[in-house]
Image 1 (tube, rainbow, N blue to C red):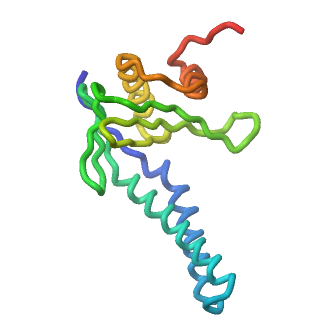
Image 2 (cartoon, helix red, strand yellow):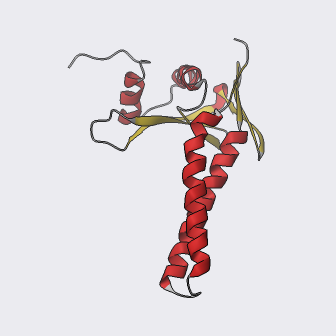
Image 3 (tube, one colour):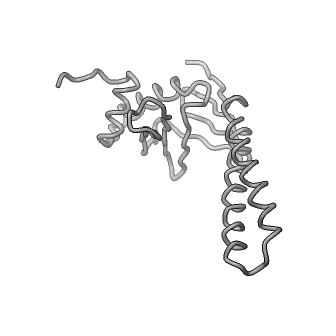
Length: 165
């Protein structure tokens, strides 16, 4: 297997930039307009911090590069380089999030861990499916136990055969 390089496309992060930028700008603007020490002051300060952290997380994600290697998943970002080694994989969880009851619209994220380091990637990442398939193969080789929700999500993703009811 050769190496493959993946990034979050700007189009996938544009909504996050828009939401966090508008939220931060509005909450910070109103924060500056209210009297210091008031309840509104602290509420708007908290909102500005939350939206600022969301904006920072989005910027960090935009700079992150994932490289799928035969020996593991290399993660290169603002905080340096890390490797999720397939031979030392100790965490595997596939989660599904939805905002609606019918589960039609939502997203998956994959949490991997190795040697005390964890990474969580979502399905907006180019190459998510390739990383999911390879990490599931490594989890099977390492005999890592999974939760019932991870099992259901792997089935929904087509990596497990659906069992008859």
